[in-house]
Image (cartoon, rainbow, N blue to C red; front, side):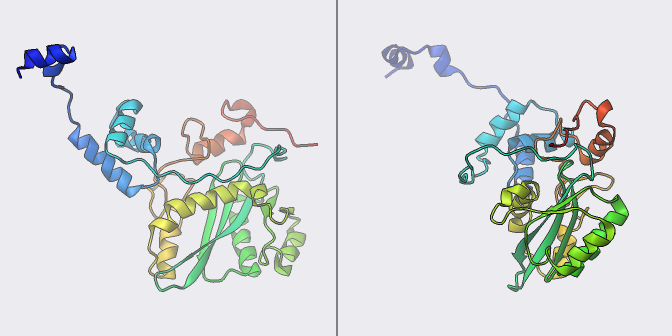
Length: 279
């Protein structure tokens, strides 16, 4: 059957049938996008688009989304958990750095099967990881020592929030809080979302670092988890292993360094106004 007769049968325009796309296949861009997606397998197209722009590739976000979909790079969605019914009161903290720190532990194991844990300290306002301390055993005295060193570098926070773990309720921690006048708040048992900032950070850390890395030894884990281990020097990061200045709900993708400077003068900053303390 001829083309003319076939087009007449299916009621199609012959020009449409003969049309061949002249769009560039973007082979180099596709390869770059695949390389970035292989390096950051839990990054979606929005975060990969930011990395492309950082490398000097200025394209439209919709084009990044189209290429991302055509290359089959979509991240598999996690099953969502049930949401608690009811409202939660806003946290009684001003939108300033060092107002409240959150502490929690995350666990993993090395290739030998030996388990270790990481003590994470997160600033609830800037969402910055202040410290990530990996070790096979972290006692209450070790927690006090790490916090004392952190306070010497960054200053004393207004409050520290944690769960009711034995290391965090030990006599060493309680005595240290009494000596320096630190306000330490323990969340209700079985309510981890009362410490949601560090819990969210732990989830990201497990998803993007712990599940993606084989730790050969404790020394290797300390190198991989240490701040600045995978970053470009001179840039402030939320997560020490990340190459992207990402915050939870970030304002215009501003990294933590400029954000802290803006929050130190909140009344003059258009980014974030301080919330009043709950009465």
